[in-house]
Length: 314
Image (cartoon, rainbow, N blue to C red; front, side):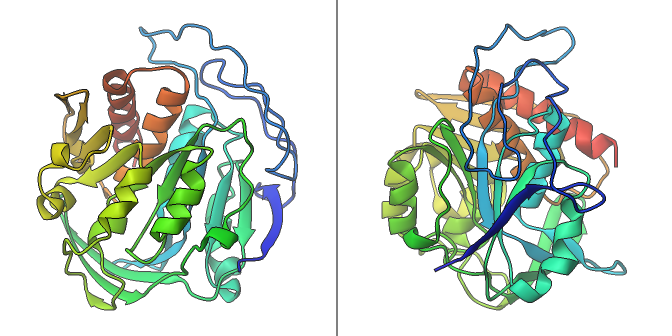
């Protein structure tokens, strides 16, 4: 069982403090000071300003393992879905969205300072292993070697997510991260976005070789499935998976959203930047827009614009 450590809002001085108000749109009214288990008060959303691209950034929750990412000629970097989702939530001004993370206890001092700039409430759960990857890119195309697999999240490892939070982003890095009973537990009280990495990545070290040997029962508990184009090629026809909303992401090149029998393509101008984490950023922005009342196609447009903006700034 993962033992929760203290929850806090991270700043550059490593002090817990009250989160700042959302800077983009009206968003939420919430107080999460020192504990993400505080009561969350979700207010009514004013219409967003379409001309400026501003919209209500509603609170979501993000769960997942952190990773140590190793790229040629660069020092180790903090990675994993929660980190990249935090980049998006910070950009949106959704500063009270709780982030629940795990890594080996001995690696916290190395990996957690990367959250300093985001001002989000982070709850660190005790862990024994840190996922570790060697990454190499040719444009948006990635090759990867897995050096270590992160911890398994069993149902009794799950934190208590505030009941007012409807949408949860489950940022799996490997098939072992979130077994079917864990997703079932989460889905009792929340709508789940699940990362397709948790379907196609076997829990094995060595060169990453995706396969389709996943537990299809997982998908019964998923409201939104996020797949890269490579992952979609492994799982087969996305519309046949039985998930209400499917997101196909193409790095800096946009996305396709599938819902209600429709497939809507959202194009974007490619950006010459490191696309690591683009899918996680897309997922967080999409859920925040869905939580604010946007339809899937508009939420996908918002998410595409946000990812393009972040990558353009690199």
